[in-house]
Length: 307
Ligand SMILES: [Zn+2]
Image (cartoon, rainbow, N blue to C red; front, side, top):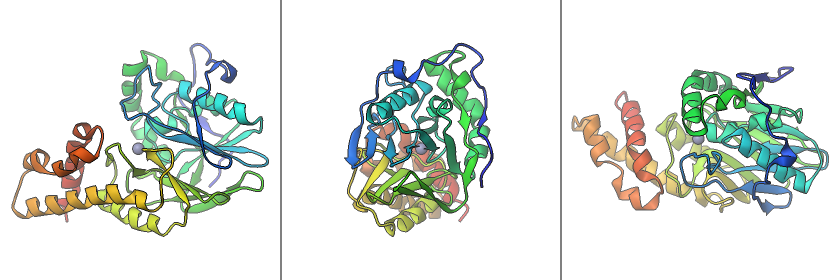
């Protein structure tokens, strides 16, 4: 589904964003020829890290560049654009948002002036708009009052299933998924290098966050195993990891949660008992575990109690 123009909400009414060439280029690593990734920190978003907590990257074809996730703030997006401009002057024709979480989409504004087409899962606009007030509040709590004014750019080129885009002798395949990490997950496969950008369908090191469906995510993991790829760029974790072994840690964590929550539910256990007890054998394996496990157990308990 294509729409003629992107929609900009809360467009900058105050001030003008710094130009790309004024931004310090974001450090990026070349994980395959023409495929670059910036490593997201395992922190919460702060002014110091510019919201740069997710892996974000870009792919350079013969005629154009595609950005895959734009970062956690317009500042990070501009730094990503500066990194692109160190490599190539080709137009940034596409910005693909792997899902609606702020650390992946709030750099979009930096690419509006490039004339980029913003691509996302068909559910992304509704999900982002539904969460707009809380995202603006969270963002402004970190970056200051009024700072979200230019931050939200909602894609209008929407993908319901699969499609391809061509960067010039370089085809990217985009596949949308049913509800898993969120209800707006998609992955991008660079067919030239067989690099899979998995967005937050793949977490390594940082505790996965369930904002969709734990059972749906487990199904997505099974579907992803069939995707032929030489490597994966996870949404969080190292910039590149072996495929499909990268799926194993999160699958083990989710299977543990499902098994133990089902058992507790069968015994009539409460949500409080679930969050007090379940998941902790995984705590040493994941960073920020205490910030996310209780939320994951709550989400999974709420889903599984209706089985
Ligand atoms: Zn996410």
